[in-house]
Length: 368
Image 1: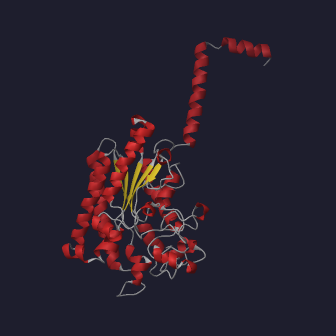
Image 2: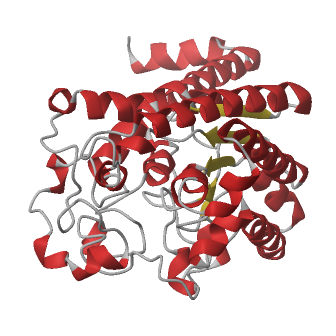
Image 3: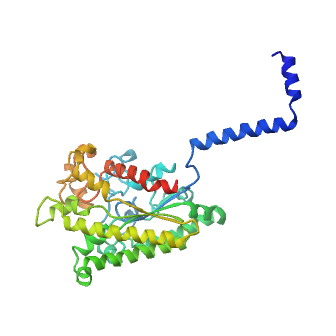
């Protein structure tokens, strides 16, 4: 077509035609853009409550021995820095944050080096050694779950001052809230301290804990949370420390503990289902299964590329955790990726990544 022909063609196009062409082009661009960033903006932040499975370093700033801010912890974290995470690298919640298009790690709230602007896309209130039961937190002098919720309320007010009420309210209502807590209530408290075992049967204690979990979820919902993922507990009878202390079958999983974990998980799953139905108003409460994948890894380690399942990478791998792990740092394994556990209680980064991938497929999709 000649230049005169092109000019005649465009002169013939009505203004309505030009508008339609522009609108169509714009829509195609928007569709292509949204397909590339399907999850962008849906979850603006991740907010974490829990114990050492998700503690990003809050315990560094309180007077407790339950810390992981020294080598060999963190040796595979960015820069090889021991942040206070009880592993050689990142945790499940760090991988979830990355999957949501947020940061590659979720910062600890008590770490004063982070500004409120940096915490606006992710904040971690977890404390290693804590539980739903306040007595569990007292054992290691760590942050109770109720105090974590108080910190969250403080965080909300700081967020409003920094961002304004409208933006802060949107972040709070659209954020993903993750709870990873409960194992210490059994592993540190019920089975090793006399008070709760004298007061409750295992079934009664489970009911007590589930009531506390429901109360915590109600509290965070009242404070504005609408997307809540509450994790069960893993097969803690198979962690190296519990194998070591298994008097009936030394070195083997304590199946009694695993049965208790399964009973607890069934009750927590049912409770979260009830709360999800009760809240309404667009709120979602999802149970996150953290039992099946770890149990399968432990039963079939070679299928996942692991070589050692009964001992941790740190020290002898039989009993060391926290300060004991630091004392035996010289004896730490060379390649933590071959180990299911990094110390005698906590998983390696690679195990956490496998679990996170499963949660992304089966639990996180609800919020994406």
